[in-house]
Image (cartoon, rainbow, N blue to C red; front, side):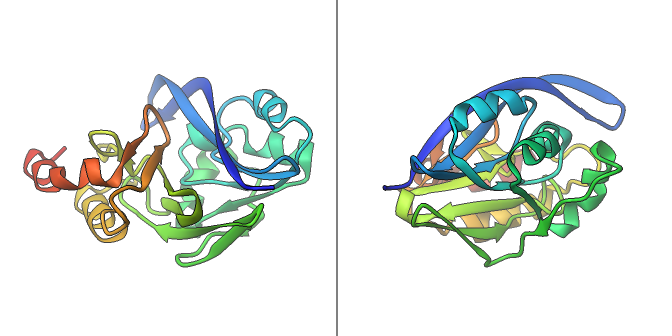
Length: 209
């Protein structure tokens, strides 16, 4: 079967630096009728399990370790046996949410994950978080950017563990070099394309987003 992309929206809270905010998160499921991976197990393990509908879950991939992107990961892993994968630079953030557990494996820049015949290449795109990654799936015409790039600009960099010049470097050097028709599948909100966002890079820098 051919790999496809599904989006599940879950709701919960994001907490960091003493504040808490209500958020809706995109959970991306990539696979076919038999197997899948989940990108960002946010808020509701039961809802994600229902969306998987009996498919074998091969991995839970974390684009970064803010709590709203990983809070359901251990429960989902326990229910499915899937391994949780995270870039090691985000372990300090992971420990803020799950102090008594540890991811099962590491993500590394240039690593390839394969599911249902589709390859996803790990791109280390720090800035929003030190270990933030994006996943480029050329066969699916998509890049999964977590909170690095949204429709309209970069992810937030006003809190701990984040850095605005770094996220701009990541977007310019790792994402805007992708084909312009590539669909950007974000951690929150609507999709966009590389071509739609690329012209605005200098504007973002000027605004200091």
